[in-house]
Image 1 (cartoon, rainbow, N blue to C red):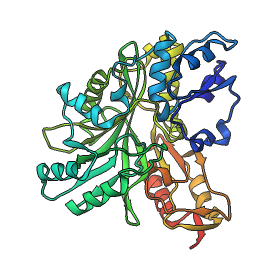
Image 2: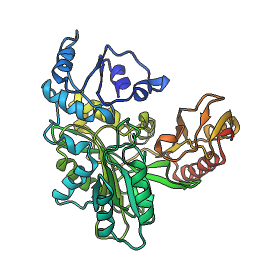
Image 3: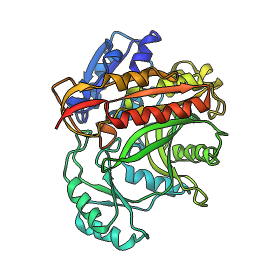
Image 4: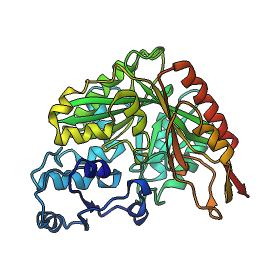
Length: 417
């Protein structure tokens, strides 16, 4: 986002929130590194000081836009305090607290997951006494985490208890302590992402992705990739209903401006329809590595749409309410490691086979350096980059998607265990 804003000629200052970790501050792909006109560190409770620091800059402030998950709450506070385009702070808690988020969706009259926020073992026992699906399956996860960090798919009461004990009091990927743990029903069916951008309460769906998540060497939730969808895609009758449902979710959360990355599940042939997993009130993550697929296949991305919503309203107005026509078939594939150990070499032969596929369009490489330790891929935070494919030939795309996934599974890393 910052990089594309700078490319369009805007001066960008960054504000670090009081909850952002040092590792996140240091995280920036080399191809997206840029010079900010200022860096401001916000400290807890010091809103007025941060506001004054922003006003003291030698530039006229135009907008405050959230950059990543740890900035969601602060962006609401600062945009409201500075009189910018804002979602306000009245419903801010719904944009980070996944439990309250789901309850707000339920109160809005939309389908929502059965859940309980647990702070102790008594809460866990109460959830288990009330939740008895056959066969048993439940989700245990941090209430304010990100990605699939700490998410456990549990197949028994005992596994739920073990997952709760493992998470409660631990530090999550955002550097926050898990003071509470969210227990939810396991939503069956296919999982999708609906990416949206809003301006003054007008919502636009700018991408629909279908997750390819699989069991990977014992890990239950590993991203293999995402396929880009459009309304009318064959064999996908629920896409239009998903968009309508997510627009209702945005209203329930008080979203009037900005980007939201929502994850939902739909069980085929069931009357319940789409059900929210969680709405992340910022851009789709992954360093924007998926954006070239959207740009190639749709002619725009969530990033470009977000910038248009804030700076070029006429361009935003011309975007369709949901993607219904595409220029090609595309997907984002993760780079995974089936084993952990000391990285000895990259398998350039397999990597080059993927790069030489006619549908290959771009890559985002986050390989560790040779000699460093690599861990087995277990979730969204332990993949090592992404590869993007797109083609206007569906048969070719499907064959090459399968070939590329097989090459990744065979291993792109040579590791000494």
